[in-house]
Length: 320
Image (cartoon, rainbow, N blue to C red; front, side, top):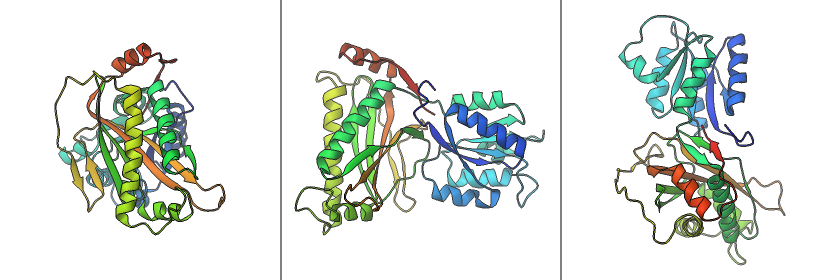
């Protein structure tokens, strides 16, 4: 990872051995991974609590109700099949078909180099140029401030996720298309928090918290439109369109709050926190932004376009 100031991904850490635990923490820190340590009994609940995970680090000999943790691995995979599971092997037995399907990245106990290779292969799946990430944050903050003029808007460090779980109850989706990308941008937020923020006066003068769900939908939709317009003006030349016109089905399961774009690539994710300077103790309104370049993403072409447009920097930022 070239830019250590950016957080890369969040992983569920299921490890009990003190020596290996310390080694894994050091490895994760060096790679920019945020760890969420849990015991076996809390593993499935942790998946419900954290909707933005990049993967799972699991010890085969983790104390469980069974001789090893492979049944837990299958249960984790069944609940969130998009998350890669990195299994620290402590035995030499051959995994059966279900176990092998759940554990995508087994690695020998103590061989951290192999784990690093697995992480680089799986979580370093896409490379997002630094100018693109910086520009997206800048134009998104400006668009959000335009819609919420009385709010203080702060962007958290960007990261990527393998999760396909929707945050909150209100989501928008808009297509992005250029010579270097084809995909979608999503904005997601909690309806109650957004209504409360409007009641606090984060929006325009005279717009309060008595908004119905349709008005709140329109509010987030207009914010999405502003971000899209700024993205289009900066990164999509008027005459340029992608040559690749492949389409894939988008699958949405409202009951499970799940959305899939037909791609296993990690998605760029940025969280924006909106606070009221006059009410510092009020919890912030969180808007989660995701970029899903599931149809086409050529960072090298973006670098060329950015350079021709007069971009100051062409460095690359590797995300997990």
